[in-house]
Length: 391
Ligand code: CAA
Image 1 (cartoon, rainbow, N blue to C red):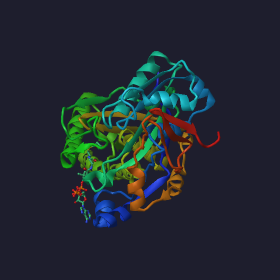
Image 2 (spheres, rainbow, N blue to C red):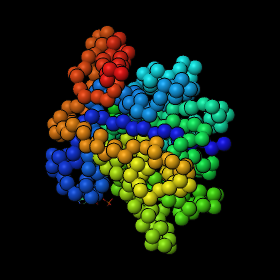
Image 3 (cartoon, rainbow, N blue to C red):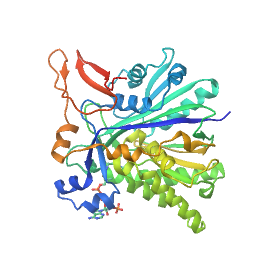
Image 4 (cartoon, rainbow, N blue to C red):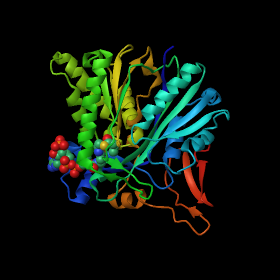
């Protein structure tokens, strides 16, 4: 039985910060961000958007009533959770109106966990071929004002529907993971922003890629030439480019190398305009590739490198199915162009606003732009979500 991604959707915030503005404000040469990191803009969320509203919006953009009546598992993968106990998936399940006899859980291992969620979804559908599993990778990457990581922030969510006989791509059975106990990036419970050994994290990312890819090739017998494209976790596009250069086989014919490079460029198109979305970054890269590449065809294989600090990495692969293009959008860049541009001052206020709770645990928020769902307030320490688009 073939199992894989039947639908894939995306949501991000309504506000955007231009990298040139950030560079000017921080006294940095704009080329450092545009050429050094390959970034153009970052998606910035107000307090009324979180992993639940973004995740529900991403899923809402792809699900039909029939899907909602059939989905029997909802997994939210995140490293910017809103509650230590209650899973964000429970809120998402409710906001989307998914039938009640479903399992809803949250998964965590930095930016990696959506890959584990996909594997869990695949195993569930293997055992229950009529099932549909909703996997949502949702995060807000927030490092702090004037920190080294500030230029690599972002926010967004990717939703994937995993089914038998998928209409976009089949997940293959040759994945290989690697675990390495390191402190490159972590966020203790008492901190709202992560601790980061930035340069060390980039070295670990690249070494986990090199070693996992080498072992994957040895075990699977596959090599780069077997793939039409290689997608990477994209904390910032320049690191993904370094990853691409690391796996490149220089002995390949020029036209094969050129096609891989062209598809790599398509895979970073969205991230360049959104920034890091942690768990969703790899899948945003996949979506960007699928929606923007004109050379991909049914039967083509795609390799994917997932990396979560701490660290867990995985190489897994997928095969495109007949007609995949008709289940994707062609105009997503127009959505991104419609976001409201904000100044650095506005970003500093918007992105770091924290709930001002009274003694009873109540807070209200200003009326910011959001997608179809919003966090409207906190009542007695309970987060209040609403559908705001009147549907
Ligand atoms: N013109 C052109 N390029 C310039 C330039 C200029 N004027 N000034 C600097 N550059 C280039 C640098 O040469 C460098 O490019 P190379 O790496 O190709 O040499 C690039 O801009 C970045 O500059 P720096 O090396 O000075 O690094 P930085 O201060 O921008 O910090 C970082 C980079 C440490 C990664 C920082 O962004 C950070 O801490 N980010 C958060 C952590 C992160 O994303 N880690 C990635 C791996 S961990 C992971 O993958 C999990 C996750 O999602 C977090």
